[in-house]
Image (cartoon, rainbow, N blue to C red; front, side, top):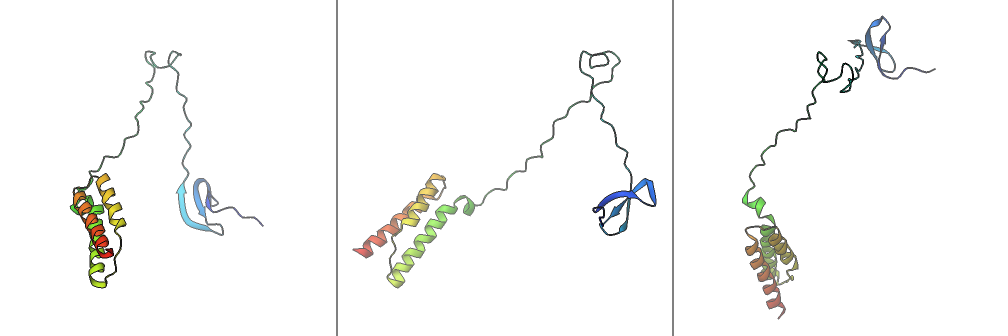
Length: 146
C-alpha cells in the first residue's frame, strides 16, 4: 500500500479550484487556491521585427541589478578592544612577577614576549608598554636564576 507524500495536492472535495494539505496520513483543514502558471514570454531580439528599436514595439523590461544592503557603520572599538594583545601581555607579566614574589617559582617570560611582538605587528597603541612588561618578565626570571 503506497500513500502520497506529504504536501499540497488537489482538494478531493474541490479538485478544480483548490489545493489541500496532505500530511502523509490524512487531509488537513489547510486549503489554498490554485495559482495559475504564467508562461514565460520570450523577448524579441534587437533588429528583428517587433524587436527593440522598432517603432511601436513594446519596450524590453529594464534590468535592475540587485541592490546591496546598506552598510552599517561599525561601532567604535574601546581602548581595551584596540589594545587586547598588549593588555594580555601586561596581565601575564603581572601573574609571572606575583608568582615569583609569592612562591619563589620563576617562569621565563617567552609568552609575554610573543604577545608583545604580536601587539607591535597589530600596531596597538599600548605595544610599547607590552614590550617593557616582557622585558621586565625576562629580567625577573634572569635575576631569580642568577
